[in-house]
Length: 257
Length: 217
Image 1 (cartoon, chains in turn green, brown):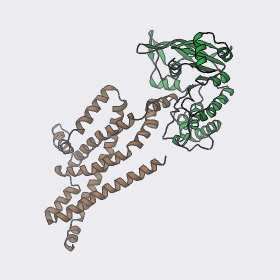
Image 2 (tube, chains in turn cyan, orange):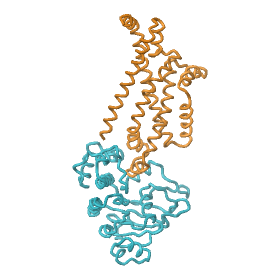
Image 3 (cartoon, chains in turn cyan, blue):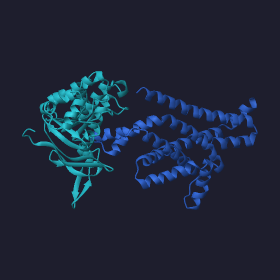
Image 4 (cartoon, chains in turn cyan, blue):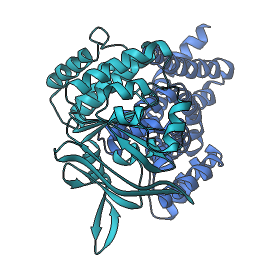
């Protein structure tokens, strides 16, 4: 952490699926322009944590504060209440999410995918939305294919459209959930390069990834999760060169870093 | 042949009137029934429990009832409870209810076949659920159901013949009246059959065209 004010502040987050505690006392601060990578084994709670921040999951304990505002819940007479759908939608628009399986809208073109949120959520007039969407498609290297449908694009291209769709909404924070895991090895690099560029531009990123080399290169901080807890966190050099806990050492050994 | 042409000329207004009535009734029921089906399907897939149960009851009861019974019931039973429909209104009502139940089940199926991740993708860009429904889910579902929808339309045209029993002057009843006068059963029933075929063929062609246009995407 630098001395900057935390843009995202997670305090004592806890979540259960049935009797399994998937998130346990998770606390994490992300400052503006930070690039925080979350690593850890499958089932360690990384993705669930990201989904909680995007309010796609409910959580029972703790709070998430985004840009000074607690999100997802409000306290009424000492009891937590999930916010109404309209309010959740407004808060979700503050974060952008990119999914492992792209989740593009198959009935819309690349341009249509990026424009939907601009016209229906940000309520920009069509010409302005189109211009902005085209400029974002250009920034992810897809200037030539705005009218292609997702089925006509490669996996890497689809994922870059998804990144443009999230970024065009001008979110305060972008959540990337294993965005290269569903890609052919050859297509991974083009997506990672796109993300690296965003990081360099100072966009705040919270990344769940299995690409250790990428995490090491791009992150300002790396968080290692194990069994729903944050087991260790620090600058990438420290995490990858001098892991403090045996569990992280074992994980990194298995991940062939 | 000359005799048939003469009889056809005599019956031309009755026949055209019947055809017009058939088309009118079918169009009105397809329109109303599809809207009803859309609302039913959305309620079945995403509605709050009580509404979903209510719609489930409606769909199951109507789908398990012969259309003729629906037609007779909306003509005779509604009058008993104080709703006075003309024969044409009762007919359109019955066919719409019938169409709505079938379309409801079809729309529900199409909506539930869309991966949940589409809803999440919509949420992640800040869309509220009604908007996700309007811009993400329904456009995908409607593309899926177009062929079945066309088919239901054709079924409805055929089912409209049943309205002859409550005295709606559609094509079949018109034909019966004509035959009752000139006894040219073979000729006029064949003609009626051909006319029904033409109507349904046009519907089918229109559907095919719409389908190819959507396939291009």
